[in-house]
Length: 404
Image (cartoon, one colour):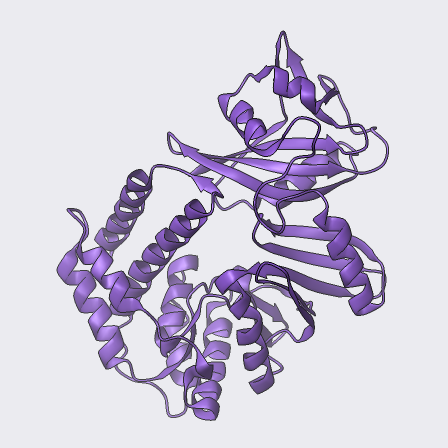
């Protein structure tokens, strides 16, 4: 599903925003991109290319319509206005409220996030233009170094993920709310057992509204696409955790039965017997149980030479260990690591039905993505017709299972 990013670039001192005039109407800058493009990074690149110093402050008010997801990207301009280029000009926010955009979405989004005489904001601890200054000051105090710049990996009103460059070091910041705060505790537990495989926590602070601010060391290296290297590292970490903790690091058990029941309830298209059989087999016949990160893909595995670290472990569970590598293989389309994974265990694993594991991983990830959409929709982050989204997810899963 393609994205359209609508940049609301605001000069807070003057209460103005960058827009182009089209007669009585106006239009913000818009970026078209693919569904897996990180919106914050795309917006940051757009601003940098035009010499506009700015903080990318929010990816808000998503709306899915006709197979395209529209997002408002809130941007706080800093310093001089040299970034304005024709046909863009600085127009008062109140004047924009009095008119209409060329695009219906922009008119709708502006009315949702701006009140007359006020700055843009939405519900959520990070649904405003002020958090960059507060987070920057907290990071400065935590590492005793000024923040020079950051990379906005995720900037929703309820969650922040930032790569941060300070004068002395590089760090990683996350602002998490609700159930997502458990990622900090999970990572600390995993790092205590295997400090060479997970990022160390530098600072962790509870904040109002069930929010935590979390700072970790930056994992140097690159996103790892070497399937054999990932497989070997994953197997060794999983075996160590299974042997050292015995309880899956106090993780929640994988709720794959719920995912299988959802897939089996499909009105048509999804091969019900296939999904039920695969999920039951994985849960009953897996030769090893341990920590399983179900959001595993190359971007969440960092390699620096032979050293491999795992990041973004919020979708972690206790369950059948090989399922994690099946999820990785499904995401990157590379199954060459299966043999290396089996041999990396001591004694080596035998009899793994990787096809069934891939089917189970596909079912779980489809169900988990739909559950995430429902949570985001419930708190107003994303607006779409639930039945249409579920149908799209089911069709995509059915096509994948058919190929297998």
